[in-house]
Image (cartoon, rainbow, N blue to C red; front, side):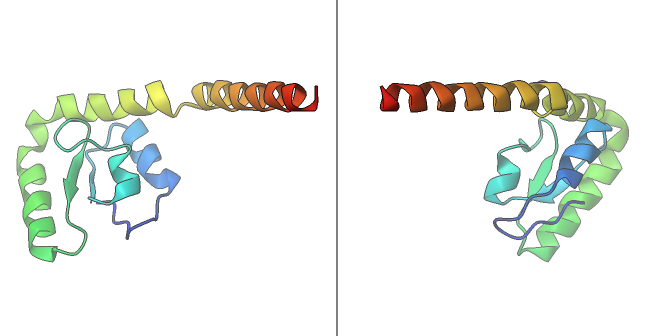
Length: 106
């Protein structure tokens, strides 16, 4: 269970997903950037404790049949949030920034 009030996100969610953990998470903007309900995890309304409890109970009851969700969670992290992927993105950002600075100074 990953509870995040609006505008909060931590690497704990990514770590859990990378381990192939079934994740039930708050349906908040930053979490929706990573978790797709029913695809690589499950979302529930942060403010609706009854829905949250029902979603968690449902996921636990179906856990043996949700291997594909676990695999998708891990693949999401490897494909988009792996350190090598993020390093390449960061280096591309720096390169683009340096090129635009050079163009603006010319």
